[in-house]
Amino acid sequence: MGEVAETKPEIATAVFRLLAGGSPEPLPRHRHGLSRDDIQEAQRVRITAAAIELFAADGYATTSVLTIAKRAGVSSKTFYELYASKEDLFLDAYQAVGVVVREPGLNVPNGGSLRVEPGEIQDYASRILAVIGTAPAAARVFFLEAIGAGQLVRIRRNEAIHEFVDAIAPAMRDLRSRTDPALPPLTDQMCHLVVAAGIELITEYLADHEPPTLPELAPRVAELVRVIIIPNYRG
Image (cartoon, rainbow, N blue to C red; front, side, top):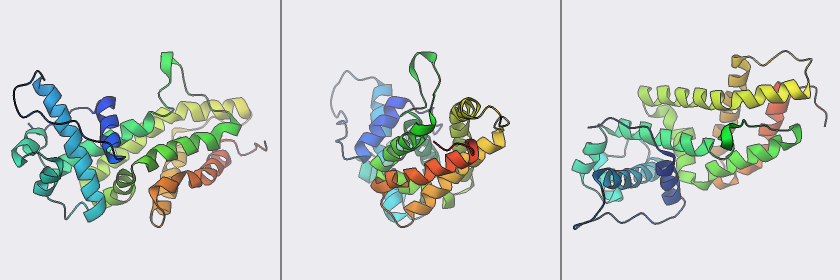
């Protein structure tokens, strides 16, 4: 009870579908053939999506468990069967967003690796930004609200940043080595700098822009990547 399981990609995708305006799967009220795990997954999707919307609209601090449960169409008892606390839920929600953001290009089929050409950097950045902007509430929560949501959430945020760095670092190193072999290899710190600076650009942008317009930021993100990873590229 209360221990957050690793978020499955299908759960994360279902959460984003709800946030983008989709309809939730109906929860069974009578005899049915669903397993307990199936029911809990459906409840988890509803609760996570409801929480993200409420955190974005009203703020993390002022949103109560009762309000989240009511918005999700479940009881408080059901909430506490899945989560130990509101903070526990936030951590799960953050994990779900991380899964979805990594999906558009970081997970390459057939055991391959991500390969980005210099001229494709802006298109790749635009694709990631478009995914983030698909669910405006999630974008606001995870780039703006998370910073003030408590120590455990801030720790999870840092972990999520490191996970993204680990996922994309091989592609950044490959891009540098192919484009300008004379440059020294990228260090872990330089890879982290690229991602952290990109996150700060997104956070700053969202302070006075709507999330669906995030792809407009792609040229600045691409410039950041080029300046640090392939500074001599003039293509």
